[in-house]
Image (cartoon, one colour):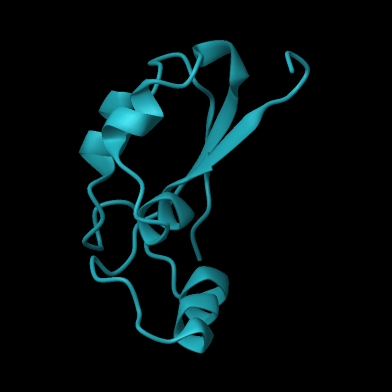
Length: 86
């Protein structure tokens, strides 16, 4: 479908185990915007901790262990960015 859009959330992207190559292959016109935050590099083992981190333990970009540089490099430079931080 052509009338859909994708929101890229940095934390959810890395927690899902996706690859930067998969992200780069998406048609740019389907990417609406990005939510940027940082977080622990390692994915939590429990679903409860995964939810806790997503809801209340996001970090300011640069204060966590996510590969934000790689993520931003894989997205169109003109993609709007929304900070999702405490």
